[in-house]
Image (cartoon, rainbow, N blue to C red; front, side, top):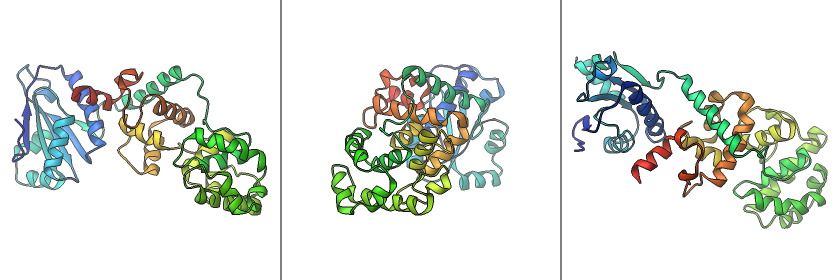
Length: 338
């Protein structure tokens, strides 16, 4: 049974072979990493040495930082639910004290197989991402870019600013008329603020968005000859433009991949897929850029957004309909806890 007074807990189930065991534990660690700040995870003992029998315990050392012990135990139990598992769970400080005490456990663990942060076959993770992209391409062959409707880079810039905290469908309804009335950056810059607000009043935060568009277009007129610039650095100087907006404009309007546009769908699915633990969008983008080849950043963004809208929804993801469910550690956990 579960125990919280000790650093060691056990559960018993049928046997595994070592390759299957390492693969399964590594998958669970990716999920755990989204909830618990993992520092190290080491498989040691008879399974690591290749001398395990059907009755052998599976010794797994988890070193973490952050939450209270009760929370850490609960997370490990709920997520790393592996047959015949013996978990040894410590904070970094506790583990250092254990090593200093001369305990045999750290000496034995250090001779084991490191599963986190650098599991055996690290290229497997890149291959998993490539397979995710391959399958989503086959599932959504018509997805070629943003769902926002636009004709010029200026249209796209304005539409993307408007899309914050609202759906592309609502934005497209507004811009159908807006883009006919305002054709140039000067048109927006010289428009009375109240008039621009009225044009987009059906959207959330319309007053703030109207001010952002007007000020951004004023900068375009004064510094860029009314044209939308082609670099991340220059786009980020515009009012209301952060990395997501800049990435959407650069990749869709100019075919320039300087980063990955992290919207609510990309953030949610990247965490569910175990591609990041981060909540900050800039940090999520950094993790994805390190993992995904640059030439696939554009496709990854648009395919993930489409999958998030259709299948991997925020509240009730349709895991039973998902073409990448076997590549998703969150789907595996949902199956086991349902």
